[in-house]
Image (cartoon, rainbow, N blue to C red; front, side):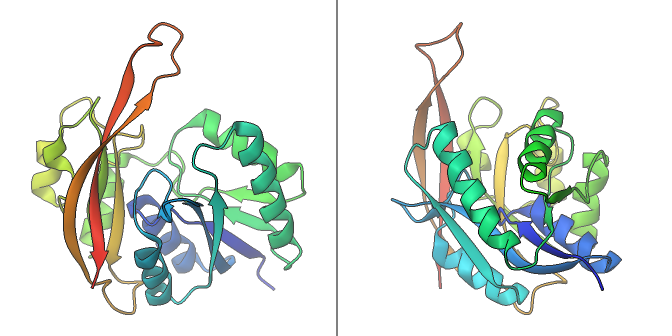
Length: 234
């Protein structure tokens, strides 16, 4: 019997490609998706995608969806407590593994593994240490389609928000930007591809500027600027 797993679903391209690999390898059974939602705005944390599109996406993938609702600005303790409670409930469903689309952020992997080990679960990373240029080309070659929903202005300007990722997009990226946005340069929403029953239909709405205070000790007065492209479910 294959072990059962929950998939930590961001709605973006890395999650999609990681899920594709897991389904192709067929060594574990993904029984549900898990996504963190901003409770106040009903949008996916950092990606800015409205829950209505997330639900349509999960429906097209044919997988149940668990939404973990977070307060507007949760502390690390609040986040950890909510995650532990949610994962304990998931574990009670007979699920022993938790899948992530992370590629090379060592600290993040260590954190995830430690949190899961504390409740007796295992973390799985299908894309770990794979070349990100190869991954984005594999993603496109397989026929997946994704749109940029959020960009960090530290790396990319507003014009990149709302763009479909294709070969032109990859060529236009500055040299210091990872082609998969693994350092948080941009986030995406995947709306079609070989594991979808049908495309998620949406319209492109306005692009909105959001600012967040920096936590850096050397730059307490600064702020991070993000541009979010709104997607509206048809």
